[in-house]
Amino acid sequence: MSSGRFARVAASSILAASTTAAFATNKLPLPFTSVAPITFPISYPHFWSIKSATPSPDLNSSSSLVKRITKRFNIGDYYIWLYRDSKGIPTSWERYKVERNEDGIIVIEMSTKFSDNEDYFTHHRMTVDLAESLEARGERGDWKLKSFEFRDANTGEWTQFGLGENVQAFEEKFDIFSMLEDSTLSRNNNKTNASEFDSKNKKIRPVKVNRDVSELVQTQRHEHTEAWFAPPVHELPGVAFLKDFKDHTFTLIESGREGEYHKKFDVSSTA
Image 1 (cartoon, helix red, strand yellow):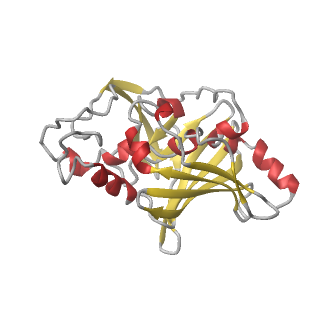
Image 2 (spheres, one colour):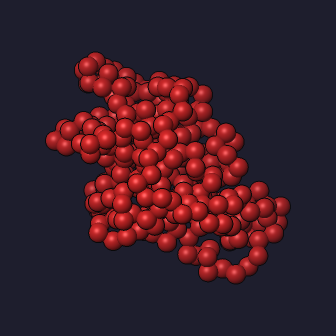
């Protein structure tokens, strides 16, 4: 990759959003709200803490929760978000692809292209310990990435970048707590004896996804990302579908598993 092309990556809004700690220290701009979010109380009565002293062998153990969330990050799984400027013109495409999944440790490579007919080039990757991420129920500062690396465009070698504090690169795209709040847990009527996930409120934002109205959610825990995620009842619970920036937006346009299947998405910020 030429130095000029890499410069475009460093300056692009995609990395300003997803690798904030690596390229800027300023807080991300507040989103515009074309649809007023609805706020109402919510609790997670069926979310069991992985710190419970008396865990249930099937639902309340750390290994069980990690195993469940690990299934959402299979090798070859990928997601593509399209970034547009304030006029709706595409500026870049960002792809997250799972390259490793072993013992609750996943590696996600981040790739970019600047036009639809280009090939993606990989520039960063992050290593995530899902157990540590699940422990961070309070706030993003409660955990770190195991590593965040930069790929040398000339040699292809990976170099550690930062100390793993850039958890926004992961949390902006995935709300793993919403991934766990699925229909299986919702049907279970047992009361938890562990501390619940502390999220007193969530916001709802109706949007159009493939012509149907969907209600994206933003929990208090993930409010710092300013992204909107598919709800627990969706086929992709906890995956970011939309984010508004000061001068840009991103929307999920495709997901799938490499060599097996894919699905396209058309997301409109107004329902």
